[in-house]
Length: 110
Image (cartoon, rainbow, N blue to C red; front, side):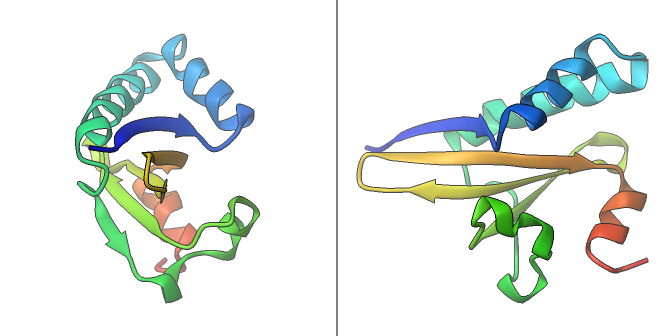
C-alpha cells in the first residue's frame, strides 16, 4: 500500500493557511474546514471532484498541474488540489482555496 501525504504547493500557500488560524472567525472556520479536508485527503486523495483537463486554469501551470481536483468546503469555499504519485507514495498538493465568487472568476464562470 502506498503512503499518502498532503502538502502545500509552496511556502506562500502554507503561510496563507497558517494566517487563517489567527484571523477573524470566518478565517478560523475556513482553517478548521481545510484541516478536516486534509485529514480526508490523507485517507482518500480522490475524494474531491475531478476537473476536466481542458478547464484547468493557466494560473496553475507554474505548479505543473496535469490534474486538478475540487473539494467543497462549508460556506461555498472550494479547496483546489492536485495529485502526484509514484509506486511508493501519493501526494495531494493543496494549491489554493477560494470563496464561491473568486472560484467562479478563476474558472471563467462569472
